[in-house]
Length: 146
Image (cartoon, rainbow, N blue to C red; front, side, top):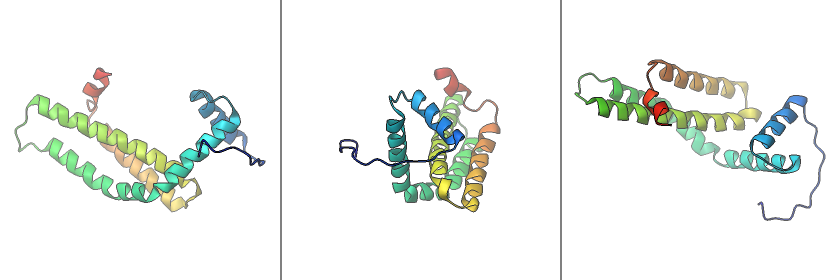
């Protein structure tokens, strides 16, 4: 797509906040022109839309996987070393961080969807945050490694 000659022009109306968001993204990603920023954002949106079915499948299994990982981590019946527990916690934090990113992409693709879908997405984000917040020490080792 990016190697194609750009020959089509069109006019577009945006709100002040939409333009501000595009400009923020443009400067944050060091894109030379507004047109190129909008082109790249369109490509990102098209790519996310193309993977919508996979994202929806992920969102359906996410709570099950997250609950299972949490149960494994908090299962007091199994003897685990401190290092094993820390490794499990780090894996769980990485999974939740990845999940948050996936949901953020999915959320961007929801702009044209129903309010019900947006509410569902918000509940999933709240679900992730709830589990991250359950233990204030969660991810402490991951943060120290950076």
